[in-house]
Length: 281
Length: 305
Image (tube, rainbow over all chains, first blue to last red; front, side, top):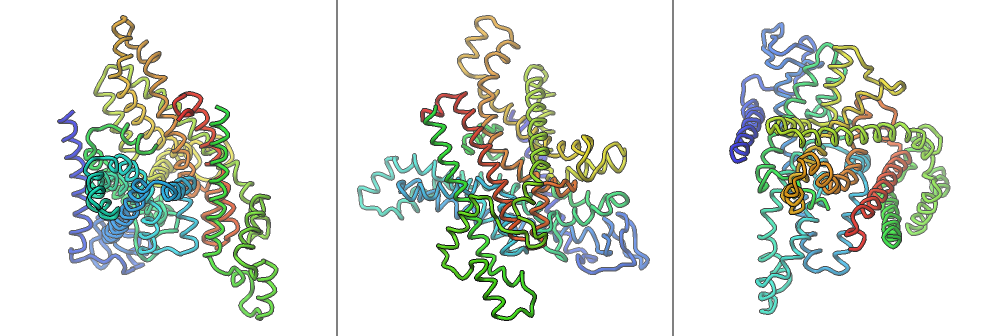
């Protein structure tokens, strides 16, 4: 089992390393230009050079834009949205979850009621409905995904707070006059944070897929900005003759999501999803 | 049991009420729809008349109450584009979505059960780990990518199956495979995990010590217990499935509610968006209610807690 775990960890690191090269090194290359259009060199196959002699390593799209450059920028955007949404939702979820679990009573019912309500609307649909009204774009998307993804953290944080609040170190602090805010900050927060980061690592993959899905639907990142999801949808028209236009961003997305997923799995104590079953309940 | 059903039903009604309230605020956030409905050169009196006709000049509480009353009676207003009641447009598309979702759900479940059980009965550890890796890989491919890969292989290259639209049974194959394999991957991993958890239980050891065969212990003893978590997650996961249909419907031009909602967003057709969100959420809440009742029936601890 141990060797199996380290083998999968190695695989995850390789996948993530390739993505890292893509988003960090490609923009430093001399030909990097995700936006400039050149209709004379549209739909070049990967490795083909334009008439002017410029090499398109991963080909060009229908408007003659360099696919490699767009993949790199799209990756940066995806990671930006992913990390900021996870940070935002983690912060909201931890605060609400700890408040619910520590104070109990009506505030717990209220917070958990909102959580249940939110879970009763499929997340993609909820996001579509809100995006329809507040508009799309990179920053909006990060905020929107952050605001709608707190429930997982909230539930886990509350469950942990429920048992922590009865522990001796919290009770003794309370008898010595510690305020609730102090208790939550000094005693509860440090104890739930590691678990939250594990949940966050799992959520990162989910958020990136959500962003890509929304962008695929045309309700996420807006052109001319690239997003892997948007690039797949732009390429769908040319699926028959130029399938790489959709396949390349799909591969990039797969590498990132699979890498994050395997990594988060090896973070959990064992390769066991029964812990996640409990989390969901 | 009756008490449990009543309590859960009451909760579901509250949830639906919450969804309606949420959509009300969503629509109000969208701002004044009169600008969308009237031509640019409309006079102030025209705007005021339309606002009065739509009830927008009344207080929020009155508006909310009316919205609630209308929603309960199934009136979500008229589609801004098609000039037909929004709910009718959505209900027209509902069978297509349910067909896709249910086919995928059943397909995913049956395959997960069959493959999961075969995987457990086989003694090859290598086979089991290969299946679990495949499942993990499938989970990392977004629905739209997987759908396109299927289209590429089976429609473009092999020309076996149609890639767009709904009609014959052949049209259903690729979209439902796209969704079902995602479900399958999740269920397989869960099923495996929960069978692993059962394996170390006392009753399993007892069964073995009585001299029962491996097959008998797995099928007769472990299986019923290992299925419980699967049912819960399957219920919760229906939301994911319904969300997944939105994307899948777009990939395959499947004429369902999800695609209608996505199209309505680009046309700013708010009544249709609201009706669509409401209907899908209602379906989801109903399914969850049924799943919970089945679950409570199977596991007495749930209904007594």
